[in-house]
Image (cartoon, rainbow, N blue to C red):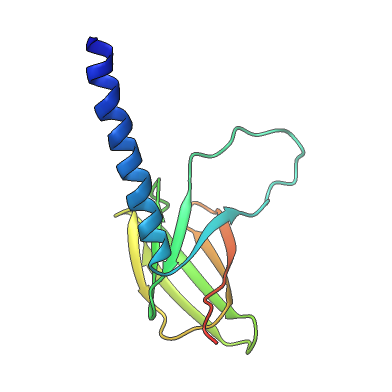
Length: 127
């Protein structure tokens, strides 16, 4: 009986967290940036705990880091028209907002102070 009293609130809290996360992602265009392979040796590596998500809310890219990576250089390249936006920001707060103005579908590349490069394609859906 004591386990049931503990499990039911825990399950409900998890359901609320998942629902809140889904609502946050649906409020703008969303992409998870993946680390590009930079190693030349072919030895297996432990998986990284780092996850970087990016949400575009109309004029701003919001990056959410699991682990801080220091200074970051951002490059946004338009797929259709070839425009390029470059910015530098600090990831030490784990959440960073970067103003990029109005953009269309684009490729995002993020190079960090630790030497890691992450990339992804953001589909904005502006017609």
